[in-house]
Length: 116
Image (cartoon, rainbow, N blue to C red):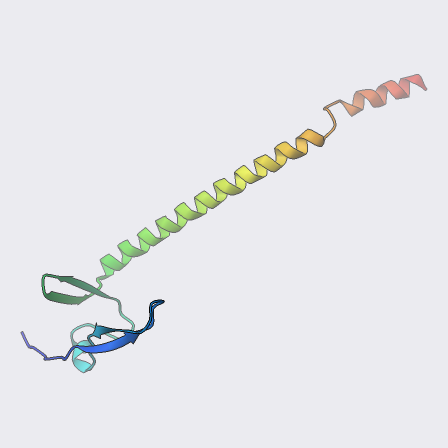
């Protein structure tokens, strides 16, 4: 396994509380592309106990992530649809309070025609 020595730099942030600096690791070079880290690809960063592991996201992992995103979107859309249905039902109930009572207009038309 080859190694590279990279210096941890810093970057600045301006959160609501003011100016602050945070550590930053920047890597670049053709060697990244040779290892499967092409421009635009998604990476996975795993870390813990003083070490960092960086690897490309596999096609299977990307498919699973996409499926999870789509399921979450479907859940949001279903909740939105239920809210719309509830709103429409409420509006229907309000309109039905002001509507005329149900009656058969055809029979009253016959009665008025018979009187003539």
